[in-house]
Length: 124
Image 1: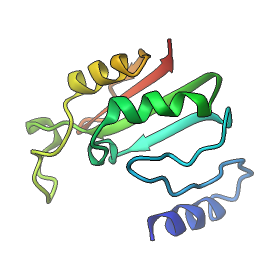
Image 2: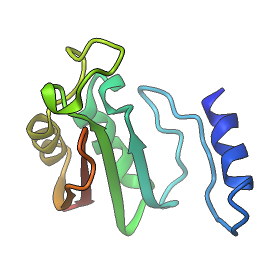
Image 3: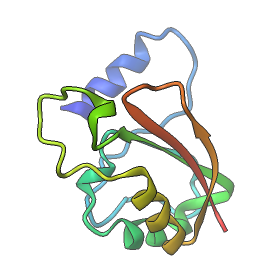
Image 4: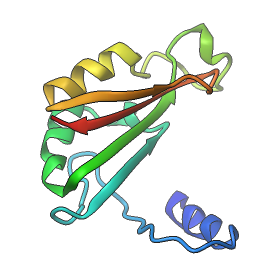
């Protein structure tokens, strides 16, 4: 359902794009070898159980210099009322550590989202 919504949303932007939408699985990103310039993960990182393994396995799908951008809600008062329990959210520092274990380094951190962290990583 969300995949169809994303595809439809892009059509209404009235701009050219080269994005391809792929429904990944929690244990398999389903991305072809060296096919990704930018992987954007928004408000879903907490659904992956073994994030370090997932992103380690994902490396072969990244082109040289590819970025991984991750946005997710803070698991504390900064995110306000979300309408769902916050106990399953991933803290920013935990995610940075897990990405380091997977072989990535944090390259940029944006602070313009008041309820979410926005991190960019590249493979080491």
